[in-house]
Length: 92
Image (cartoon, rainbow, N blue to C red; front, side):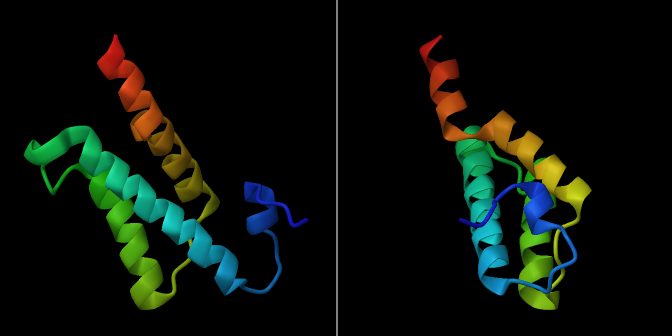
């Protein structure tokens, strides 16, 4: 079984497009989670949303891959915005 850890993705192997498509799919999920977090009054220029959306666009238009630091930022954003956390905050 292939590893899915950050180290496994960022080593010196040739580009694995299928694996990066999965990662970008997760970024799209993160963008949706941010939209859901703020609801209808979300500002389209929100820094977190813009960061995620820009990384998706860079990959899709220019083939630019995420750096290790960008992946860490995305992991932190996921911990802040993911839907399970939102449900816990509503139930408080």
